[in-house]
Picture (cartoon, rainbow, N blue to C red):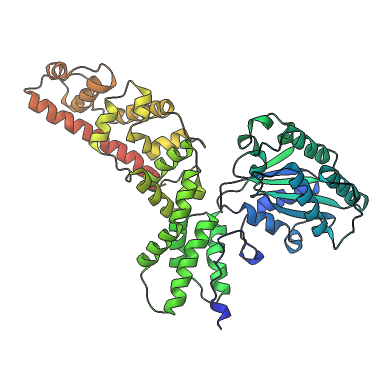
Length: 461
């Protein structure tokens, strides 16, 4: 049937069909638990990660029924504030009041004072809802447009806070960052920001991503194969919007070809082109620190410790970052190693070399933020020292012991004394400078092989 082959991955904006919302079950459970206790929530996450979709989804009674909390007396009031960057507090209170009335019309009727307006109207409505033993929850999408608008000062936030602390209303704000980080100077110290439980909306889990890829196509009568599901996971990663767009292109191609063979390479190029403007917009909105972190992750092959997985788990997004930053995949070379060895005594400079991209370095740092170059430099030096120790020969180390020659060259040149080439030639009794430089090259290559073995150990775990 024609209806069976309609593309289910059509949404570019917030999802309106509950059947297309997948994952975040644990977050929703905490979400409803917090609201059942009449508390407020700050929901944060990058653009297009699904904040608006979650707010719409959370309003639905059939979704609320899946959880064990009694929210039957809660009135969920969704509000999109994206157009509020230049509006006033009167605009806000009037529109909020009208939306509360609209969402409550099946439950109760209001008697509004003819002279009430703005904050009085809002307070009056909350009082009447309380009298009828209902409880309003304002779902304030894009609330950062309010906190960045200088028309909304500390008095406005104090007014909102007072109604929340007296138990008349809960707020759920959605923003791209914690509210204190996306507000104008005049309200930075407002106690309003302290009333929220903060929850982060980020990447889907692997299982949730597989559901989003496979279930809609199955329902539409054109299921994806296991190979196609893995292909989508590879290129879209765990970001719900990226998944939707890649699935949209793949489903559309399969529908048009009606069972004929096609090349995934062609689909890959089409999907990447579709996502390109979204990648560019996302990149421009990232902080410099986040951009640096993503560049490092994009250059690391098979990195298992991605700090921004909603972006860097996507092979498409990593490809975009490498092109944008004009950077290639990291492959450790003798030239890069020698460059690092020359900077052994300068932790900051050492931490800025390409050796910072080693998986061994990322593993040992084990941080969820971008480390400072000095921190990375200290770890790189520690790793280089360990690698040098594996070059030790048998017996006692002496200058004349040939089994220790490669170790001694690196030890005297880079690790301890920083002797000049001529001094090392003399000390280790080389017959010529040519022989010395040949052995020095072998020493660096031997150290490189040890580092590569250390890196490979992560792939086998």
